[in-house]
Image: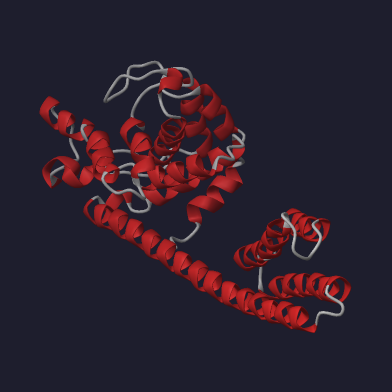
Length: 303
């Protein structure tokens, strides 16, 4: 913003006033002053917008007094131009303020919709209540430990972790809630949930980035997973992260058919399967997280 302002000042003062072939540059530079004002309106609050408008006004006034002395009609025209600046500043700030509020409301509604989708699944599979939220929390901690900074990747991990089991909506209660061993046909139905979930979100533009995470969260690092048998780095990083978070939560949560493991027991299982079922780098990052941080995340109430 400051660079644009200084460029406008330089061009405006470097080109002389009056009728000459380059006067259009002078007029063009004058219009450039609106850019830092709109940038301030988009990025900052009312105070910064006011200060930017004042800075532009000061440059205009110096220009009017210095370059148009003795030309009262031109000075009056230049002062009239200043009214545009004082209109553009507050109007731009109000416009961007309303836009930011609308975006926040849209994101909140989007998050509420995701939570509603997950709640509908967990109402069926009650013993996994909170599972998706916890997997999303663990995944975000792993991503932070891996120092992932890419916003798009972080977003796909967050949504993919939250919706990793959404494909189970298409699995019948007879299979999903069965407490005994599944037969081959039932396992085929269960193993189809990553692809079904990915297909479901792929049709929603705001969720489509999470589709690869959902589709591949049951792949194994050694290539023996499903649905495609991907191995190593061919598995999306987000899916490798969610795989570790998913299994850790399953191990440390009591189910009708098993007891909950303690943190150290679950961690030992992850480490012993690093390079086989799991990406060893992801397991290493998870291992560096303190048990207290994981406990705090697990006990955090649902938003």
